[in-house]
Picture 1 (tube, rainbow, N blue to C red):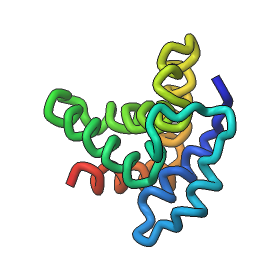
Picture 2 (picture 1 turned 90 degrees about the horizontal axis):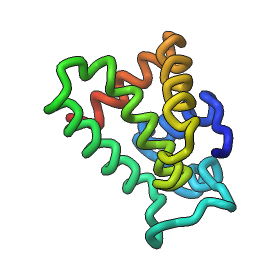
Picture 3 (picture 1 turned 90 degrees about the vertical axis):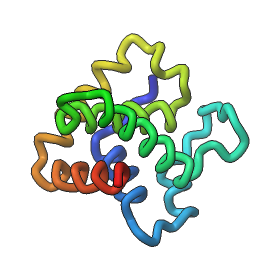
Picture 4 (picture 1 turned 60 degrees about the vertical axis):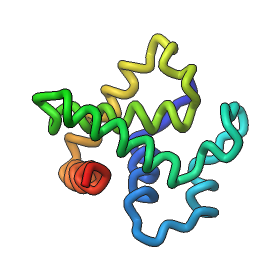
Length: 123
């Protein structure tokens, strides 16, 4: 699985949460030449927002510890969006996403940013 740093993931979340997201800028940030698209134009900011919102709302209705589980679920969804659905079959997928979640949640600024993003996606 291609490596993605917590900084790159944080940038993805910043792009998603900005009110006036520049689509061309976000495409440059998220561009990956060797990623196969399963659907035409499937990798738009809006598609990711809708997908994250759906996953988080389902998690919220079925999970007693939503605040703890939501960041990991969001990160996993972003990773699947960025690297394709087959990424979940990678043996390192769970470890990588947990590591990214722990890193983001350990940083006070990123933790606050993640919490606000999750709140906006489930509103």
